[in-house]
Length: 361
Image (cartoon, rainbow, N blue to C red; front, side, top):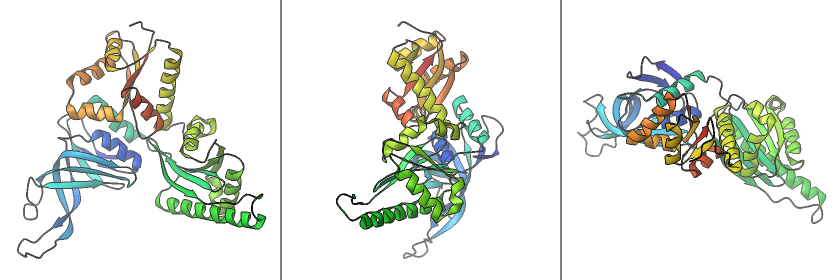
């Protein structure tokens, strides 16, 4: 994310979106009541002609946000609200408009006041200049699952399958032909995805030797891919096989500076403590409040969904709890629910804490 202008927590911030991870950050920053302004496309209708269907024009508008939607598979954020500023000869004030925010979009975001968590999220995004964008292909005989791992997210997008006859039941020639057809289809899909996104690495994973055979096929088709291809074993060619990768040391080294790995390690540590019942963890609002009152919280893990709700509702009690934790030098980490670790925290009520010492409630 590129910050064009930023002075203080009461100032308007100019933002340029650079990648999908930026959209996730903005989804957690933009709240109802915020103001967005910038150039945007809007259909302008000539009211002097009854049959005029209008034309799309690029104009400068400012809206008060009422709703924000994140379309992760379309790589787009949509912010809807009423127009409060714009060319009065072209638009009607207090009518609705939706800003489509995507890679390359430049706009300005104004809040009455930025919370410390929002400001920190913005500053962290500004500092992160190198973002890993990994394409994962989990492949086995006749089955392939495509996924992506970004700084804040892990997702599965496409599945490819083709029947490959076994050597016991079919001709060896038919088996080889079916296998090559399958590899060609998967390779074509990989090329299509690479044309849309600049991946820093492509990991081919799965059980058995199929992943290695497919990697050899890819290099034969395009020798230039060799520098970004790597292979890693997994138990299946499904979504669960892709999830396994985050536990692999080689993949952890690749993603060593990414948020997804930081968040996964924190959640894994929490679950280890829960499993051993060590009493140096807390989840549930009441237990977390008790731990905060004793200055025991070292790390608070809160899902992006929970944090958005706190900010949108201006929940005084929760905002006070967050300030209390920060005042006692506790660290607050917003965990993305776009990957498995975030879903686990969501299952614990959306919030959990690692404690400095054991407590008996």
